[in-house]
Length: 105
View 1 (cartoon, rainbow, N blue to C red):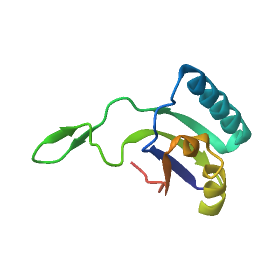
View 2: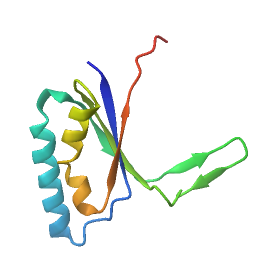
View 3: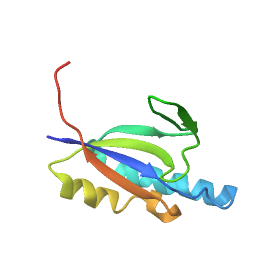
């Protein structure tokens, strides 16, 4: 089955400690609902740096990256259905879904 990466972007931090606790509870409930499809829960990101041949830019601003997860599902439509229920969307963020390509190294 194909693997899809959920790339979490542009979320606003929760407004209070209580809101942060609720967000984490929602996140745990959502991730548990994915069952075996969630093959890598990923991690949140703290700092981002964009590197080019010419230089490196810290805090890349637009399209702030917040983290990632990996699911293994039958197709992009199923991945999208999982993403549409993600609590990341409730804090102003968006999710880019990218299908991974298996390669021999």
